[in-house]
Image (cartoon, rainbow, N blue to C red; front, side, top):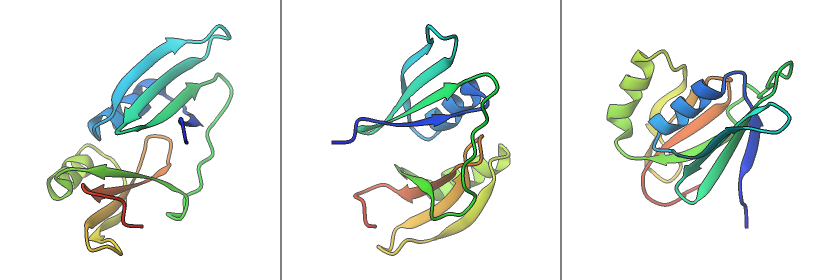
Length: 123
């Protein structure tokens, strides 16, 4: 059973703000004994953990095939809000293989994030 996925971030506050806008709940936000910023954001039953480590830079792949997928409610209303806030939309609203609305955006570190209208995972 997957516990969490962990990523480097350039800006811990920006990463936390982005994922909470998408429905995430901050479970932890602290400084580690090594002096790194750390946050855990719960998204449904899954968790993303972020570390801000001085001198380390995240290097996400720009292709949509490497991505985080999230169910969201009200994607048609959410997408224009994200776009107005400067969030890059890399694949505009379209039907998913299962027929639900989906779009791809980038998080503050350039990671691809698939937004899929609520419901169950359909591939």
